[in-house]
Image (cartoon, rainbow, N blue to C red; front, side, top):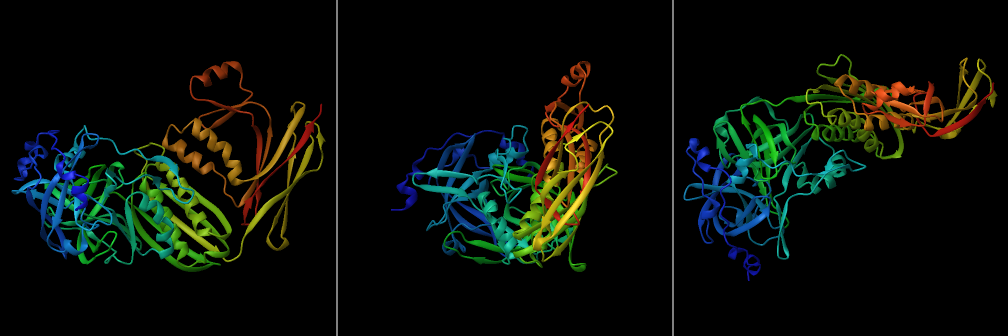
Length: 590
């Protein structure tokens, strides 16, 4: 017996549905078929592209309606036949394919059963897709704010509907990579697949999108489009189908892309090169062509955008060299999106390194660069060294993208990234130093005395580096214990990052200042401090604050810790990655 009838989906009743007046969208001449009027056994047609840019029809039989599968959401169950569907089933890239009954638009092909023997699809009602531009549109599906230790991509799950023992899921969105290494695609694939994407390298053609606006008449219901996240020497694009065109407005996919809500993602007209049948999920091999407009809404039931508009893109330049000899240079444009941009930068840096550098064996990477921001005189400067026996590309790419995630996630809508420039110097030696000892010339001092602090750092092949700092005990220092801590940049940054969490920046300038105060990891830092309360507000420390000042501070968002910094000194690390932390105590006498 057919699986669908075994789980009795065709017998589900039809829910009366009337969320928005569909007549409001009738100005294009397209009329709509209400969900409440659907009955099992009705026949219609669907539209999609199976070859080139030609829109072809396939047959649709309504099996029933799955009621209340989500907040104010129904799903129409339908059987698709005709054309290539007998051998391919429901394909990746068909998301958004419009379905019509008696010439009236019902909705978009959006979901399917994995490994199904027949092309049984879930059709998203057009009523729900149109809501993405309404003020009552549901917010983006909440995703975990935690990031994977290997990726800056927020975690999440593709949409799914349980039907008996069977599971219907959003049709996976083909994510085509051009110019990336296979290792880079494989490294990030688990996170991408968890979000409902199907990463593919080498099965999409024409990776570089033409940088011109195409004829909007090419975008029709059933047309293939590609949402372009990155273009240039490296490209990332997601394929799907247009459901409905209302003047300059375009609705597509029938499910979320990434569910980021308000956004600005360019999309291009796309052509199908071939179809690849697959037991799990067949897919279209496609090639993006010229730009067509901008996707401005990405919600759980559809994506929507505008024809003829241009998206704001961020130019990224990455230069890779080894031992002073230039190897490769990459020029790309990526979307300016607070969630997507850091992840795209991470992928691009990983691939640029992986293209020429070894992944197993001792290696060091020095990354220098700048993030330029609109309206800011000074860029955010990047400068760090990464050394490892394996996985240096993963470490460097994640760490390089973190500052961008910090800047774009701070909540300042007017803070736009203008340009990112990176220079990556590689070496096949492990350039690292471990802080081994911290020595004080004296254990007891008096105000006015000069103390010498020695930091002993050790590295590969018995390398030992000794650095000295002379510190004069300030006149007026009261008796007690002084702590001298020599630590790497990451550990020294922790206190500043803690302050940033509890007292976030109140202006873009303060945000940039905080980012530029973070220490590089190719140096050690000597911190002189006492175990006493210190209040922080506005990014500044206030040790020994009088009661009157505390009253003022308490009106804002001050934070308190018991690490009152007296002085800080930079210790040269000879261009190597420094790690570790050591502390020595000195007693101040009267």
